[in-house]
Amino acid sequence: MAQLIKLQDYVSRYEQDVYRYPTQYIRLKKQQWDKLKEAWITDSLEMSPIEWKDTEDKKSSILNKMTKMFKKEEKSEIKDESDTRTVTSLQFAPILSFRPDTEVELKQLFLDQLFSFQLKWASSTIYEKSDAHPKYYYDDKLRTFLQRFPDNCLLLYEPVLLLKKAPIEMEIIFITPMEVWCITFLEEEKDAVFLGSNDRFWLKRTNKQEKKLLNPMISLNRMSKIVGQIFSYYNVDLPIKKAIISRNGYIDFMEKPYDLSLLEKREYPKWFEQMRQTRAPLKHMQLKAAKILLDYCQTVSFKRIEWEEENTDPFEEESLK
Image (cartoon, rainbow, N blue to C red; front, side, top):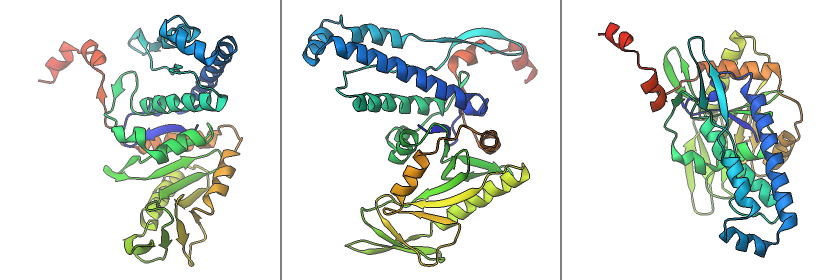
């Protein structure tokens, strides 16, 4: 699963230390998958599907014992220059809510729970939270990136960059160990045909009608230009690539720019498999690129109630009057 390091303008744990959290995520994911798979194998060897259901009704199966074990909250010590305390951190603990029949089903159950966990990591920290929109839990494009691409890929999904104090909404920035992809999606009706050009508008054709739509290259070029300028200023040496993705349609663009990839219904599967085969580990330049972009991202959040109450300083309040 690719790692969601920034979602919209929500507070992200990766903003705190982008050099630590990616490797921590990979380690945590592997540990919990191994634990879940071992428990599933052990249980499946001892119980048949019918016995599973009967025993589950009596609340005495191995599943219930394992569920309680996974539900235990793990503690982590948070050390600050002026304070040291132990708080409950957000840990990923998968739960077998039902018994999958195959390892493929087990893996999908694991990935679905991990997807929800990633959205929490990308919208909260121990001290702060953001009001994440529920739509992201049902976003097919976001789920595809997080469940189908490798762990060594870092995703900024619809981030808001602050440039000269002006917020600029981006679309998708996908950082792999070798390159950075600026991506926009062009997906509407199934098998729609998009006629591309360098004009302000493109044409969409279906069996029923023709319709004009804004040239997706406008926002894509702006996004890649901004990322390129930031990388150039901070000496980030990673190639920037641009792509328009249409998984369910076709794109016909005779005068396509050389630096633009059209990943439509015929080309997307090949690109997708190439990305999935990337086995390179996380790279220092990749993490540097992620940190620089996160530094430019806007964040809207509020302190958790428990921290707001504990950290109230009456002397500080008095001095502000």
